[in-house]
Length: 459
Image (cartoon, rainbow, N blue to C red; front, side):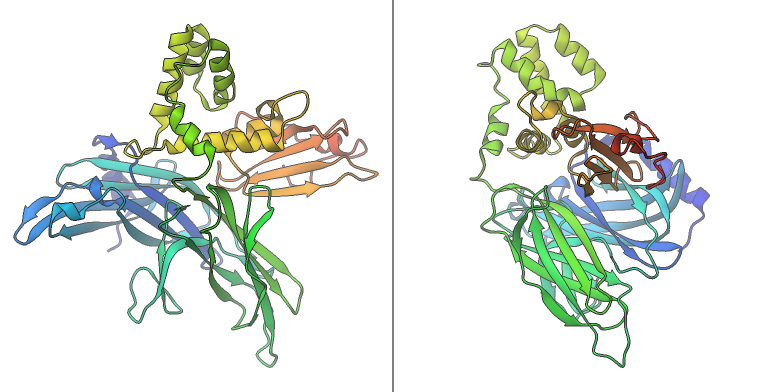
């Protein structure tokens, strides 16, 4: 049933007036091409089964929930879907902390920048949970080879019955909205669509595809060999898996590359994911230990808090400066407790993520004169995380080396430009389109003194 924007917005705002608890479920999304003006957006949810309160029924126990997902621009809800979720068990002992209920909802939405808001309500306890993410629905080319986003999954099976998880070539693909993998799900599946393949039905045209897992610096960690396929038409769908059982805990990219054999055009897409194993990597053990700071001196506490300043609030920074050693211990403990996305787990995922970023920053950006977190690249990486895409430009007779980092999912898409001004390997930030960052629209003068403008990227 179609509902006017006015009514949808009114209902949604009324819902936001109820008490909202911390986000205890995962949400992710993938964007596919739809039409000239619209994209298809699949929204994935993964909801802990024990989030809901179960009540006794005739043959067991049942929970009842209500889910609402909306695309919002400013104060206006552009599109919204809502549905009920009923779960039944024979005994309450069947419910465990590790169980997650996957769900999916599909939208066809006009090109533009939105905020996706998902709300889950336990109709028994009346508790409400909310997650939101920014999304930039892009314009797909009608001529150049392009790939959609990648849907990651830990569970794929053939199906003869169509349902919400079915793709159109006979598979059920259960999305992993958390993008976290471990011992229980050693296979990671990647699905995407390829657009604008050259096609002539009178010829036996082919394309090739490669599936790769890389680290954050685009170094290959694991990969399948190139696979050659016959073109089914101007578009194709891709699905394959890579075994990650031998890989260590960490942050990685799942990458799919397609090459059109006739035209030589190449396109790639990648999706970030975590591997989290219980018995690996000191960074995770240390993350659990750092809650106890009683053995650290004030100097050590100051050193620990220094990189945390980038993501701290102004009040937290001021309080830390004014506090004695005991107060600083308390502030650091509270700092991470307040940012723990799932207090029920043994590991503070926010702290683990930051520590892993910090470890990477110190490995990649540190110089003999300063630690990695004090460099411009290190600071940006700690605040915003790994870039969606990096363009690297080596030095030449006319230009100094520079890099452009793109973040497609922040503020509708932003970039950071770093230039090695001195020629000694120190990349300095010269321009960004992100809010509250350095902006210099004549940044190309740092790359080449003879350059008159920075029109190359239109910023």
